[in-house]
Image 1 (cartoon, helix red, strand yellow):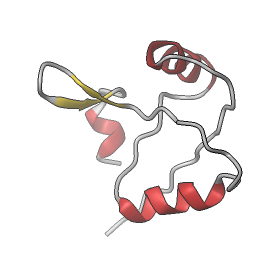
Image 2 (spheres, helix red, strand yellow):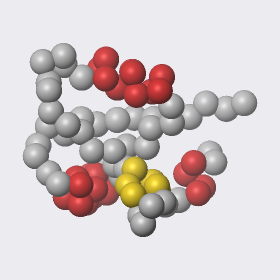
Image 3 (tube, helix red, strand yellow):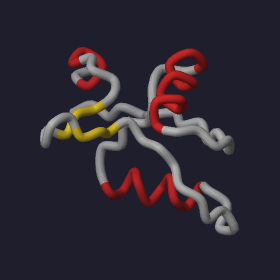
Image 4 (tube, helix red, strand yellow):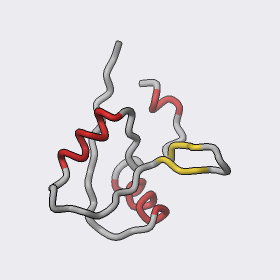
Length: 78
């Protein structure tokens, strides 16, 4: 089995989801894709405990069908 290591960037600026997606696509790849609860917990532990805000990820509801913002099957199969 192979393990894909993700790199995350925390941007502490107010943006709505669309603005956050655009910013991430211009400066990185896309909004975060999170694979499992272990990864979520690692991200939560990495953020300063004093931070109480929200964070956008790349999951969105498209007419009752959840989809990832980065719509590239090859990316997820690497």
